Amino acid sequence: MKAMVQDRFGPPDVLQLADTDLPEVGADDVLVRVHAAALNPYDWHIMRGDPLIARLMGEVGLTKPKARVAGIDAAGVVEAAGAKVRGLRNGDEVLGFCRGAFAEYACAAADMVVPKPASLTFERAAAVPIAATTALRGIRDVGEVKAGQRVLVNGAGGGVGTYAVQIAAALGAEVTGVCSTRNAGLVRSIGAAHVVDYTTQDFTDGRVRYDVILDNVGNRPLSRLRRALTPAGTLVLNGGGSPGHVFGPVAGIVRAVAANAFVSQRLRPLPSRQNREELLAVTGLIEDGKLTPVLDRTYPLAHAAEGLRTVEQGHTRGKIVLTVA
Image (tube, rainbow, N blue to C red):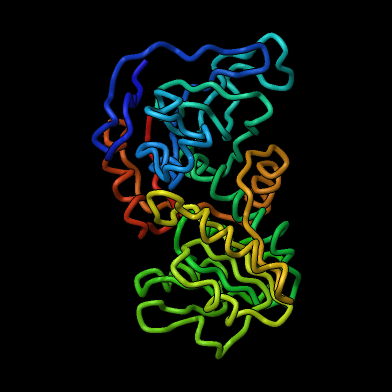
């Protein structure tokens, strides 16, 4: 099969299109014929082996990538199922967390994929797993957003941000989205009642205070973010694309956790995980018409390096997706 392989850490050029063996499918796994795969900040962190602390913790590999084929988010068709798999059959259209998604075929644990909503193309379906479940977790579970609350999403035009705005609005919150000038119309169209253009305004100036802030960018000091919160407000820290070659987003999260014990506000890191219930929750919102994936652009599989360069720059509108078949 064709796949984007990587044998060393480095810039996007380390990704090369090559022929490789089909992934091995265990008894609890399914083999997915990939039609589309999404690009995430996680993918370029893996590509570069960055931050260095992730190598020492064994998350990405010490001297070279743990997995030769990158990618997690995928949508496609079940090609084969392991002996213990129930409820999935060959030909089923699915989306979910697939190991080695930047390839024509990828393997996934059967409980990590769910039926693809019929209303979605494979490209839009691939844009769902990591970004939508992260947004759901940040807004619903960690932020505990309630109807009538003021919610601010920093990075509202990005992958997680576009989902977070919609989910908070669906919960009945008054949503403010922070984004660039070019994304203001998009952010309003998906449910934001207010838009802050970060090129001309500073949402941390204290003029307006919010019950919940979801920070997807990590470009403001903790003291400034707290200034934009109500006295009992909640700050949710999602450091997906945060810079820092040694510690990345970890340093800011550690500072917030340490400060949390001494302030009335709730300062909460957003945990990373892959969860079937969350996948089903977001696909349910899609089927109910409350959530729509936003696509910036697509690239063919062979141009994955170009796509990751764009993601790494941090100015996407929604998600960038690879088309595979």
